[in-house]
Amino acid sequence: MSKFLVTGAAGFIGMHVAQLLLARGDEVVGIDNLNDYYDPQLKLDRLAHLRQQSGAERFVFEKLDVADLAALESLFQGHRFDGVVHLAAQAGVRYSLTNPHAYAQSNLVGFVNVLEMCRHQKVAHLVYASSSSVYGGNVSMPFAETDAVDHPVSLYAATKKANELMAHTYSHLYGLPTTGLRFFTVYGPWGRPDMAPMLFTKAILAGEPIKVFNHGDMKRDFTYIDDIARGVVATLDRTPQPHEGFDRAHPSSAESWAPYKVFNIGRSEPVPLLDFIGTLERALGKEAVKDMQPMAPGDVAATYADVSALAAWTGQSPEVGLEDGIQRFAAWYSSYFRQ
Image (cartoon, rainbow, N blue to C red; front, side, top):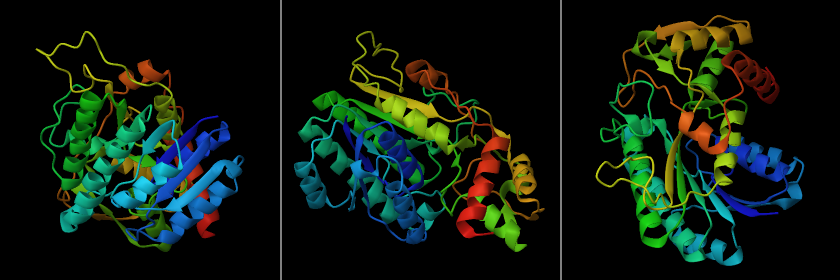
């Protein structure tokens, strides 16, 4: 039995990762600040769901903000962690346009606090959430970890790129093994209400229009939450080692002479937005009223993950296709909201 810290445990991905760790017999300490970026009741319900799962007696939750260094120090003094899965962050591309300081506190201050705690406790492996948004203005598809990520188009993306740089520094200076995961458009049961699947479903069922940005000319690498959780846990189980043959004259941004890795985690199957909407319409049995909009600031037209490196590293590949995933999501939505 191992003991893991999962930050952002009341979040969408955090809940599913904690659930998977508990199911295989590990101890999990979960933390979350339960902020009101979206309805905290959903976060509380996720925690309640976790406490109903097999192995719930091995789950401990503390309300804690990673930007609060003193509180984080107290937590680490009370536990010895075999690994840390850092998923706590201020999420959302569009929200970063109007609330930049929230991102600086959570994604930058909070991340360096987690790095410091892992460094001082000599944690065996830190796995942390990066984002597909780091690819920014890059239009070369599919996105590969070796691509340049120097042109972010939102502050959120910039903070995630900064996290990768900060992690590398700690891997180099202190030998802290770190792995960053660039998530690609995660969806499924218990999802975030600010993301398209929840926003669209709520509007479609209410007969209200959905905003279709860039007039529908968009593609997303929609990835089902169970595939994401399995990938995170498989990554956690394999600790990066220094790459002795690393070529500093021709450096790769995905690895290092230090114990450091960065991987894409997605389905590697970009879906046109209008096809996604059509799949959701069929699952709900109702047609959407579409409000065609121009491209939103900070957004990108397409995402498409090359996930071959992660598959080679972990032996894990995505299993759930869009049609199946949307059916599962729609069934959960109907049950949770009683619709």
